Every structure is written in C-alpha cells, then in structure tokens.
Length: 442
Image 1 (cartoon, helix red, strand yellow):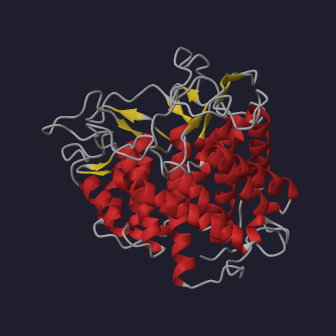
Image 2 (cartoon, one colour; image 1 turned 45 degrees about the vertical axis):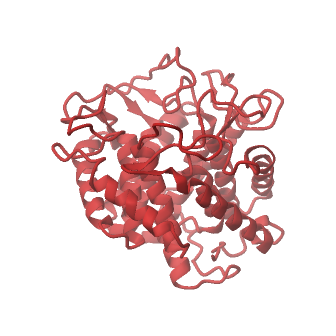
C-alpha cells in the first residue's frame, strides 16, 4: 500500500523510503494476522498461548475482541481474504453476547444467564476500544458496524465524557451507579485515539476537539508540570495517587509509578492530533509538536537500556529509577511508532536512528520465528517472561507497528488505509498533502 511521506521531510536514505523495508513491514503484518486467527471463540475472541493455541477453557475477552475487530476491519479494507468474517464476528458479538442489553454498555467478559460477570464494572478503557472497533468496521463496510458505532458513542458521551474536566471518566457499576474515585491516563490515552477515529468517520469535529482537551489536560498540563514525565493515577479531585498499586507494581493496566512506553505512545498520538487538526482547518496548537518531542525523549531516556541491556523497560518510580525491568512488546512497538512519526514530522536523522534501533531490537528478540507472533514480554536479560503478560493475546500493538510507518499522520488509521487503498496511491508518491509548517497557537 502507499506511503504518503511529507515532501522533503524524510531523508532519501531513510528505511521508510525503501521498498524492501516496506515489503518487510507488510509481510510481518500479514504473519501477525495469520497467527491470531485461531483466537476466535463463540462470544468473541480469546487470548492465545505462547504457541498460538487456545488454552483449555478459553473465554472471550471484550477488550481483546474490540482490538481484534479493529485490526481485522482495517485488514479487510486492505483486501486481505478471511479478515472480513473475523471483523463481522467481532461486530456481532459486541452487538450480542458482550453487550449489556438492560443498562447499555459492555462488560469485560460475557454476562452469564443475563447476569453481569463478577466485578462487572463498565470500564472506560474497554469502551474506547469498542468505539475504535466500531469506527474501523464502519469504514470497512462491515454489516452492523454503524449501528454498533451509534450505540457505543451514545454510551461514551452520556456516561464517560466529562465536559467539565475535559477527560473521560474511568468506570461505573453495571447500572452506571458507583462511579470510581479515579482518573487515569491510560484509558484517556486510548480514548484520544478513538476520538480522532470517530471524528474522521462521522465528520463531527467535536470528537477531535475533545481529544485535544484530553491531551491538554494529561500532557500539556500534568506531564509538562512534571518535567514531561507522566504520573498516571489521580483521584476525582485530581490529587496524584503516588502510592497507587505500590503492592502490585506489575499490574498490566495500572502499574505503580510511571510507564516510559506510554510517554512515547502519547508522543505519537500528539503528532497525529496535530496533523488531524491541521488537516481539518489548517490550525493546531504549537505545543503539540513541542510536547511530543519532549515526551519521546524523556521516555527513551527514562526507559531504554536502563539496566545495561537493550529494550524499553515497563515502569519507573518518581525518581526515574527502574521498578519493573521487564520489556513488554507494546512498549517497543509504541516507541518505534513514535520515532517514525517524529521522523516524518521533522526529518531529523536521530529519529531514523531510533527507528532502526527499535526494529532491530524487535526483530532480534521479539519476533518469534519458531511459534509465530511476537513474544509479549522479555525479562531484563531479554529472555521470554510472563510477569506482566501471559501468552500471546495482543495483535493490536504489534500489527499497528507494522502499518503505521506506511501511513500518513492524518487521517486516522482506518480512514487513511481506505483513502490510500481506494485511490490506488503508489508507494513512492506523496499524495497526501504535508499539513505541517502552518501550525500556530489557537
């Protein structure tokens, strides 16, 4: 598929301009799609083990299912056989067994005999992915996708969006009572991603503007005030919870301390938001580029090879000392994606070097050529580990890492793929305009 590199920005020697590298990315992406196909189960998608098999008693996970639906919907738009039925299965299960048909919204696991699962709370993190999946499936023309998107947006706006705070609320009980006394960066980061996708699919700029408010709160205010580090846990009065999960430092969603991989993930999303705003009306706050640059460099300084071995570690404490040394695959994928985005945005060769370094690391240590997929986590000596993540559940981060270097920063993922594929853009032709250079403060 075509890459729309901003003219004159990326050096001629960049891997991003080389056809063999782009073919390699495409091949790796298709290997990942094939590996994850067996994750389909009756009520959605379930986590695979290290060999790519469903373990005994595997059950549907709604977050995993929404991510799978998003990925296979975009792959459908690319014209890859077999992906459409998987995306349709995801849409059908989110409209069916994974939904709360009494109160609205979605649970992490299917209800049993109409009753919510144990601790059946409605999570902002999950709902952001349901919105993303529905928007991508709508672009791909999957049956029922627009109905799912309308349902998801109604729930998202009514229950999760806080107009007063400019962020998404965290979680509720099954009947939307008992709002959690928590505000978290992780769920809001993925909500920003979904906001940009929805704005492109619906044409409603309010979602893009809401994404900007999320970024302004968490990055331009909280992270900037912390020296471009990001404490992720707060109560509903925005008091920092510095001891949050101190006894569970390797929690997969809310770990103690700070997460350098999220610093870099935010950097990529800020650049996408800047490009989206410029594409929409030619204006974007100047701080988006500045903050993206600072977040990336701080994340790599705080997390890369902190114990002498390559790889981006999972978490650090408030003094930037390592807490969990393990290297999750998604941290490497997001750092690489951010490096590619900064390279496209600025043309600076240091980002080319990071881009190559991170892909060399992923290829050397994480791509599993024996059993397939990517190893989800490595220890401090870069040996397979399962302290934070077990098996090979996640397709989303790894597959997007093979795709985003080939895409423009705007529009959002599924819409960009649709534009490039449907308009037949050549790989080496920069057909999407360069939206940079006109950025100004709003």
